[in-house]
Image (cartoon, rainbow, N blue to C red; front, side):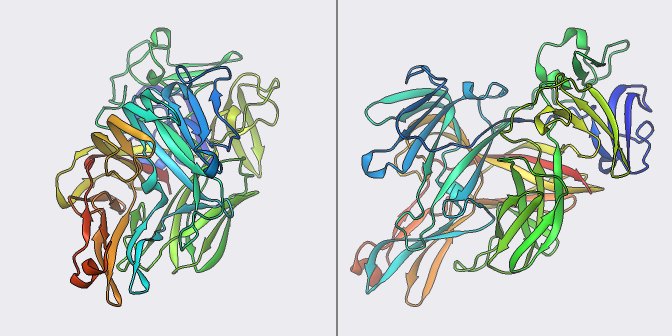
Length: 521
């Protein structure tokens, strides 16, 4: 069972709260972070700004319909006739109307072309360069997100026959074939997700707690809709959406399923008892022992893989682990590409399901039963709270950056972007079809580069890699700025002398923008 409060809490503050089990929502202190499935007094929002699945197009396609190169919000085009199964996708911030930051927290979900499954927490091996003495001598072990540009400002981009400008946006390369002519035959396309949170050193808008205003109108739930203001704001004087905890059109991010389960070698199924909506998204951490490593476990040898692919079937999240046994900590979000319904359901809905009393706040005009897109708050489904967030400036070398937080009663998870200054394509890995940019933020990834010296591979963690080790109350971020991106033998003489060419990052990490998320245990 859960407890729901719509009214005054122990501090005399009007709010909406949902607590676990028999915990009294009216008297439970806000500092007990693990007690709450939702609390409208949270000042920091974790809301999604948009999901784009990036479908394949047969020719130049603009959004909105009728737009062109000068005024599109999204433009997709095959690269050229010889590679018609590969396409460039250009995004401007206007494609995501709920986005309120010029450089947001950006997420790329890589899916394997051959089976449509999501790939997380695994290195993919790419052998490249010439054969010397009958074998490939250069290698990179990377995550697919390494090849993604991220989100930038002041971008000059390449089209097929011209260049253009994107003030705030992204370019994502998609490939719709089953192999990309590499020895390992791995090919991926990407889903783009944006969170309405800063991906650089900008503070969260209205993210600092504000003292409650005496006599303010804070809660308004009627047939016309539902609106709840954060403490310190009055519904009669709202000037921007971030002053609201939620309204009928802008919901908190709800979790319809979560778990922390054993993931042995082979296929593992976990039933969340709710049919997962089409094109839903999940965040998954694979780990062993008591410490989570994100975005992946930095394995000790370049040939060792770790983690699993995952996908959804009905109410199941399924994992296929071809490597070594590990654990999977995951959340499945109610956000998807499914639209709203139409009907005359009540805005405030109460019912009993499976012996459990359920309280829902819905958008006006929802059907019975409602869709996930209709549901603003549901007492069965926890909403993610931000336990800690911030920006860490990064210097050169193999460095550690420690963040302490209160995760009592929660399953902590971590999301972060690496932050980069302006740059140009030049030698940069993952710049894609972008010629130059003023600043950018990228999905974190882990990678190694190596050359084969005799029978063994010798190399290092790449200079553009990063990862975080996460425990119940501490996150340690690691960066490697200044280490090589590539080691390459191009001639037999180089190989004989063990003298590889070395490629360095010309647009290195300058900072980490992180968020420690709490899911009630």
